[in-house]
Length: 203
Image (cartoon, rainbow, N blue to C red; front, side, top):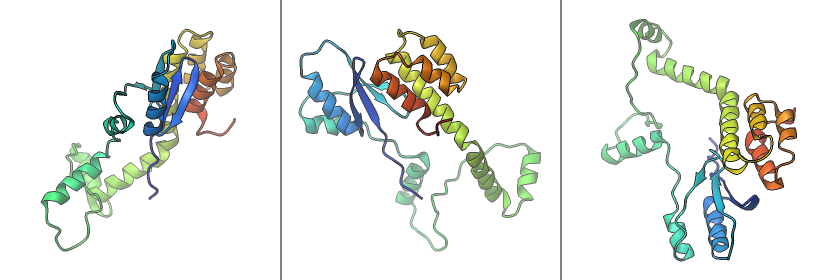
């Protein structure tokens, strides 16, 4: 399994992009910029969600880095590590990250699951994997659209054609969206298009 990519962040000073990359790099760039006289606000965005974040930039660079929020571990990993810490490793197959949790189903569902090859657990895992594969593209497109909308609501809410661009975004009309945001400041325009459509090929 490929290692998950690090979250990326982008900082803007007014309508111009100041820095982009891992949070530590962006935070230090913002720290340096914030110590220079400026009249424009600096905002840091989480590219995965489009939401602005607040950082404590006081002190030395090492202090700023030490205070940065750490990416949350997946619940499965946290639960498995906690279990491993208190349970001695016995004989038999490794746990492979399996975590027992409650699932509530109707009796007919349990009957059907119990009749599947491998039993209920195997059948449920297969169903989840199939749903993830089937809905993966739609889920990623929805997350990208939501991130783009959150970003543009903060940075472009007062710009021309914002409402029409929002409608085009939620209609997944890339050509109209790109045309409507063409007159926005370059860095804002480029970033919102990247957030919304960078994972999909040009139509």
